Length: 175
Image (spheres, rainbow, N blue to C red):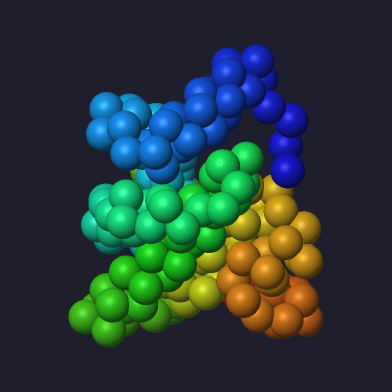
């Protein structure tokens, strides 16, 4: 994982303190905790669930709200929330994929002035499982073992999904 800035470290410590208070039944602490976690959860859910990112973020926060008392170690808050966010984002992405499947051959022309839209479009054409692996490895900075544990799959599966995801992204991008 990447090194955190002092402000990120303060937010992390604040989240742990709020989680402790919320577990004791402090409703204001729960509200503050959910507000603090929202950008973190959205940062994970959006690249995986794409257009369903807001739904996945909301669903993940609902799970956090309902399950916070089951969190044994408040120090593990962010890892626990990450696991919930990835699971909900993949679930929402799968749901959305059933509604509108995408083909890797339908890409905008290379050199399109809307580069961000091109990247999003290429990501949209990947399977949710591949987007999840890309986010965990290339954005969140997790190693294969940590990503495998989070996704509840063998390390070899993470490696093969990552290889396929990167190859599909490269192929689609250079088309």
